[in-house]
Image 1 (cartoon, one colour):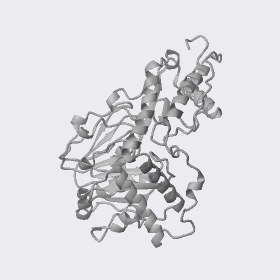
Image 2 (cartoon, rainbow, N blue to C red; image 1 turned 90 degrees about the horizontal axis):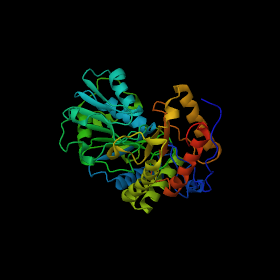
Image 3 (tube, rainbow, N blue to C red; image 1 turned 60 degrees about the horizontal axis):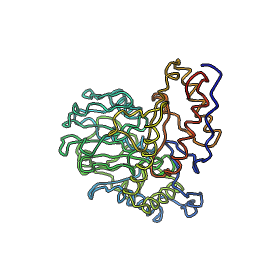
Length: 395
């Protein structure tokens, strides 16, 4: 890459109020401050009556906002969304053949674990490149099916609730960590749903959420997994579901500071209209980027199909000819220069694409991000790209 760069692009005057556009942990809700944690149950046992009540409050408010059906169990589990997904995989799989959709980093990790760690012989991986979904017509819904509703590292999501048939013989295990609280989930077509606090509601890390349909509970109570399960994965005792997990009796010790923060974000979600309000806010963020991308000559959505485009993990790839002509190492250097410049300016933090994804940008568009901040960010992206564009190339 030449060391001479264009500097003619004018420096934008308006700055985002909140420069946090990371895809996890995500931006805190608007107006958040540490004073929101003032009433946290610190120095107290999470197993006290009040501790259990606050944990149960997180469960109940989450289920109500998301529209989890009556009869489902919702619980707080260890190790974020990763722990929740692994708990489901290790506890439930093996009774039927498995189809797993792998189209970005995390869904590919679940596929790897199913094949290499669980060593399920009747496992089929349906793959797609970043920016695309696997061919859903190839899924055998008589099998158990493992999928991510939204690809956190690719910006690709299932296009509609009809993506899953209303009737299916196997269980559908859905990693919904960057879809929950931002998109409609077809609860009547799912059996296991997982998410974490630090995604769409900007909560603090380390805690996962696990929702089980009656069909999933029946599988747990009738099927003994042919593998040893560590304590943090155990959902069944003496052949019965451990119901306490779904009433606030957590498997391990949760942070009551994080619990208080989760409650704060859930109450905020209720104040903006619940799921409908959260979805509208996320869609507004995507709309800002969509209008800008349509006018851009250097960037485009990684998700090729508009119907499959995420409103939360919004992934962009750089398509300027001079950039595409560079060797991979030089492309990496250019992206790092651009994102580092935005970081130093205090404009946008942590917006480089995920380490396993194609080089580019990833901007979180969940409901805790203000559309006005996204609008203010976009001219800065043009400005920063101009700073790394060789002078001999068109701006």
